[in-house]
Image (tube, rainbow, N blue to C red):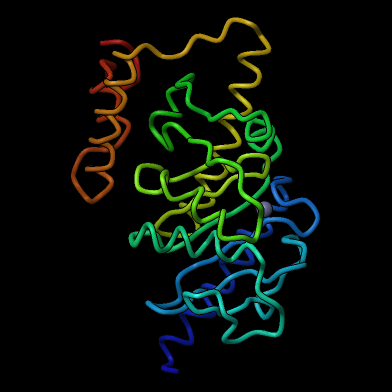
Length: 244
Ligand SMILES: [Zn+2]
């Protein structure tokens, strides 16, 4: 292994520990549930092993697996949910990191057979958009990959019926933040409906936000204006966020 590859692997091990602990502190991975993975190279993934608390997992515990889910290196066993991760990497070649967790409110939506498909707050449109519900699949079986298939191309986070959620992105941070957002959106939806007067965004408002999001992404890729100014302008607000 080259020095650079060694350093990169060490860095990814530390990141897996960091985001595992973060998920654990948020209460998204009770017991030994949940798992995280990241691409090590074109043929291998680095991932959390089975049967360990995400609050206690260490860098040395991580498993290296091939794209068929077979253990290549590591002292602990591969999670039975590896197939879920493999399905995401196969369906989304742009993805480099996958997070699977059981955040309580999002999981409650998944257990009520409800997708997060109501655009209640602006953040929903600006981040993960609609979060679909993958049909029920027995954990650890091929059914999981089949249930995710129809949703992978158009979404970056998916609820798993009677199970939990999976999110993914180009980095572990991005995948983690998407999971955090899914739980936030589920909580907002729950409370808004408990209040009894939830008012989803109007189609026209969603359209403006989507165009703001497109500009935001364009700017984030290294173009001039700051995101806040650009987003505000698109949705008709001035630099301070006040209606123009
Ligand atoms: Zn699970």
